[in-house]
Length: 308
Image (cartoon, rainbow, N blue to C red; front, top):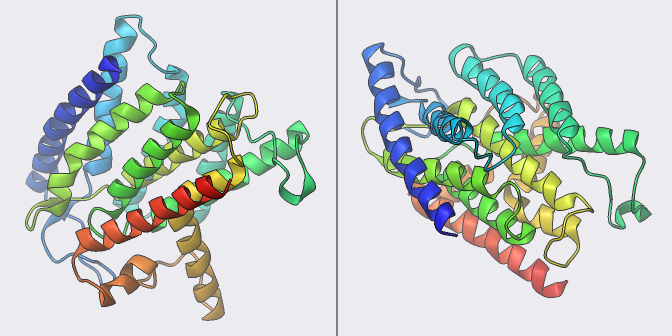
């Protein structure tokens, strides 16, 4: 436990340093997040939060690697780095969604090869353990859904950060201090340091696609780990509890897709029809909207756990 608190502190300090460094570099080079019709901000901002978050993780990993202390499976850095890089590319050049899907499929397969696989439906559709080929297709599909669902909720200040922290802590509780604990702790520390910069009125810092794709992938891996039937975890229906933890982004993704298709629009074209945008009728404050969403999601998980 003491090691986890130390990791949290160090990653938070690194996060502050990297956020300041990359923000300074991007402002100096005039690389700002453009203000568009669907933007929720009107101040100067840089999309460097994801770069700072990944840099904190990378530096922490290097430190433990050279000290021969594998606090988590370091091979996970390969797929996480791949999804991070396509996110950085998307932040600068707005990558075609087909390219992002292709890279996401490759990343999902890399996670599968690392042993992260949905190999049991736990009674869903009447199935328990499933064949390996079906397990791979299921894992890839679920990975695509989770990553893109999380990417979709990064639309107002603090929401993606708050939800990622909530979901990572939720999976930590469900997994009972898993092999991903140190990786999750470093990521949470990096996210905590981003809060201040994300809510500033001027010179804001956003996660960007680099951060949201990275975090979406991390949440997906935690879900796969929880759904692995070989893991000793908190009792209950694993499928329902996993959906419960990720309830908001999954419901928002489904809702937005239905709306866009019914309006004969591409489901991948961004707009301001997300639930967090609709909540502006209740409050214009981004923090309050984020708090409402995370609180409701926590209540859903709590009720599912009570019922089960």
